[in-house]
Length: 173
Picture 1 (cartoon, helix red, strand yellow):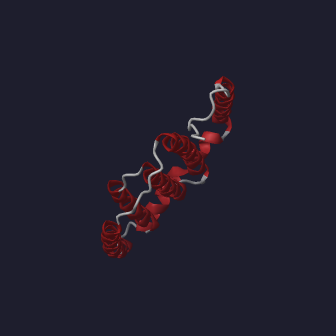
Picture 2 (cartoon, helix red, strand yellow):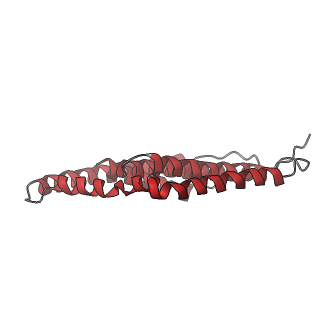
Picture 3 (cartoon, helix red, strand yellow):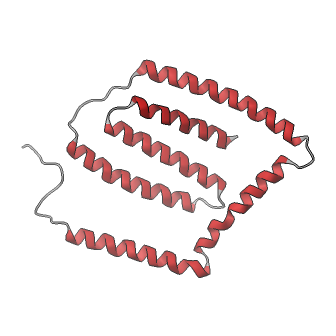
């Protein structure tokens, strides 16, 4: 049920992408979309570590894009088209209610069959425990090498960056 609600919220956020024309609003929507995806993958998998790492990587990339966009974009105010957003919100609410009724009907239909629906859900959840094997004995060496490589790359990039050039955004003072 929660998975269906997250999917519907993600579809609503996707429809908001069409209405936004300011880069900072689009950045905020991408961060919210990433958070939704991370919550979904965390609820499906055995642990939340993978989704936590995924969110941190996306957030780091979005911070870099945010800095770049704020240095290039002018300081224009962005306005939300309220009429379109209210219509979009109402349509999303109606779709969520309809999907909720369909889900409840399908759940009651599947519970009366011989092959139980809940056993299928449990099997799907148990099959996703393979992520745990990524950080166990044979594969943890590859993870440590990747972490070390990224750390060394970060240190080299910081050392290469020239402090005399200053920030991306030029001050007009």
